[in-house]
Image (cartoon, rainbow over all chains, first blue to last red; front, top):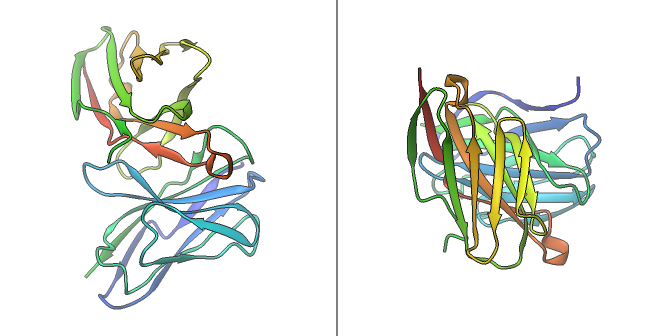
Length: 112
Length: 115
């Protein structure tokens, strides 16, 4: 079955630590995205990548970093510089120039 | 500044009746609009979309209407079912060259369909 997987489902980290969230897709999509959702808020774009080895900042990129070494993978690192990291993180992918984005199940990150 | 607005945080309807979810946008460069449905602790799933060159798109119980002059779109669900209870997000895609993959989302509307 084709789809997007995110791991882990729940993640806890201590304040001041970096943490990496995994996102893998087997849909053969060129474009991948990371969003953040906070309670009562819509999805806000963190980073996106239209092709391997290339990515662009979204609306709220500060405190985050990404890499795109493989078409299937787009990991997100939440650094200690991110002031409010506790949130629900969603990864998505789409065809190049495609219309709808397909989302993974999400990772809930809690900073203790 | 919010470019996509869903002014109703919640909506409650009776099973079998019509649900109407509304969305307003401010950016005239948006050329494609989508509705996503989201259950708690899950990723959104695509529901239906509409291009700016159309004013209506229908898929089964779901119909999306677009009024470009008013910069307004709405999602109609007829008849509503309890399984439709979820948060519905409106999203818009801009036609701005290299950024045309970006979607801008509204804050969502929680729909509750009562049996």
